[in-house]
Amino acid sequence: MAQTAAQQHITRGGAFLIQSTPASSVFIPEEWNEEQRQLAQLCEEFLEKEIYPRLDEIDHGDPTKVMPELLRKAAELGFLGLTVPEEYGGLGADFLTGMLFTEKMGPSHSFAVALLAHTGIGTLPILYFGTPEQKQKYLPKIVSGELFAAYCLTEPGSGSDALGARSKAIPSEDGKLYKLSGQKMWITNGGFADLFTVFAKVNGEHFTAFLVERSFPGVSVGAEEKKMGIKGSSTRQVFFQETPVPAENVLGEIGRGHVIAFNILNIGRIKLAAATTGSAKRVIDISVKYAKERHQFGRPIASFGAIQHKLADMAIYTWACETATYRASADIQAYEKYLLEKGEPYEKALLGAAQEYAAECAILKVFGSEMLDYVVDEAVQIHGGYGYSAEYPVERAYRDSRINRIYEGTNEINRMLSVDYLLRKAMKGELDLLSAAMKVQSELTSIPEFGEPNGEFLSAEKKAIENLKKAILMVAGYAAQKYMQQLAEEQEVLMAVADMLIDTYVAESMVLRTEKIALMRGEAAASDALAMTQAYLVDAQERAASAGRRAILHAAQGDERRILLMGLKRFTKPLEVDTIGLRRQIAAKLIEAERYCF
Image (cartoon, rainbow, N blue to C red; front, top):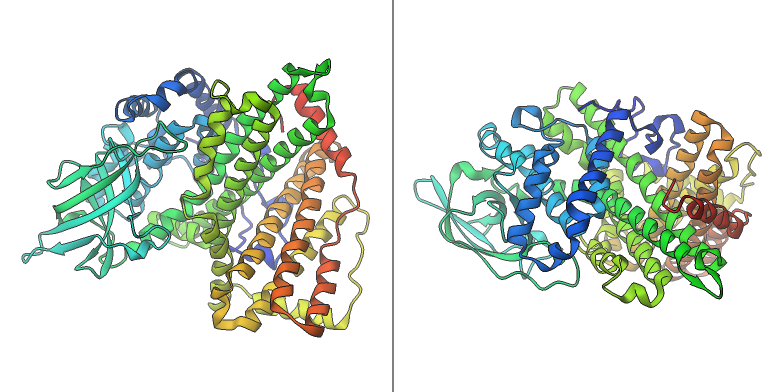
């Protein structure tokens, strides 16, 4: 599998908030190479042939029979080992190619859950943290579909607080094995997995990961969970009753299980954004076709402005998610290459790159999951009463989408993490947020001229992004200064800052993609990209004003409050563009193409 060229320009994680990013340095989907496009087509053909005709069977059948069969068919095409190195039977594709694969598999509902759990949290802990012996023993069989993998972290009493796990591993006197006891829940692929990555505390104290085979004594599973959505995926509790685990099956280091858990989650979060992008595109395809076929008052409902507005917004937010996801993915890949060139081992380079962009991964997890929820909700609305019927595909899409805001860390947790990661970088001296925040504060007290765009292509949009960053630094800087060590307790303020951060990162990504399209193909070719960017940016400015005001009114009083509110108003002044006209332009393209076409 060919490797996509990494960016030469290295942007550190979180630095987007205080630095400008050149458009020439970002990756955009218009740059997929021919081999990657062929992979995308292969994925689409696989879903059309093997998955979509069997969605009802998948949802209502026995997942311990249906899923292994389908996963083995995927294995025959190399899908279970796409990004696994060739020495372990994989294809050795790069990170960006793996993200494209994730997007293309995203629309496959319950199958996507099983597949991405197996290739993600099932495979990556061994690939990144396994010993050479563990990798040689397990990875080739995971890639071939001989073994299926699952990840056992969550317990009945520990969800978001993963380190609160109560499962224990007691070492034998001779140190040759551990007796593992505990209960795990919500385990994807739990009904048919052959190998579990299990987190437990050695002697009840040291949080550690273990590789546990299903055949080990004392391993059992509960009944299938009855779920709102993703009904075809196997979700079970897994029990360990003094299960003997050989010492050589400790994964990573004793007491360092959190390093595995949290780093794997970073990758899972950005992959979820790719999967939701693919899902949203298919839902749009279905909705556009329905809107053209469904007639009311003597004409297709696609001709009504209210429906066009919905279709356009669905496309805008999907394009936004795609844009930001591949921007961050390329940054991760470039940083991985940078670490490799510095002499870091393969595994540490992959992990270091994902950790470097932990804030972006959290941002994208929130945005992708909420984007898809919005898209499927509007799809049901476009379908009207038929959308509520299980006879129509948007009903399944609506139910299956909801879980995305919960797993890989709830969106509330990820919102706070996105801010926390940046603050930690600042405290370590890796990100100079303090100087940037102080500079914004000095601008407020001196009441400077904020400047006007110069009239060049995207100058107004770039100025708007610059001002949104100032608004974040102003609000976050004030909150950090006031609350200091107690800031973590002001969760509502952190959530407001996170919302501003998410919108700004996504909006800037859209501006950069639009600019790069114009550089590659000319400004005329960027017309639709510009329309989507401007429409989204206006929404982002208005949301930032609301979130910032909410935080300021809670945190500040008197003259400080007045100055902060004045600054916020200036920093979030919306672009003066015809957003109705922009959405009509996007809707017209969708309706003409009868599918998502951007």
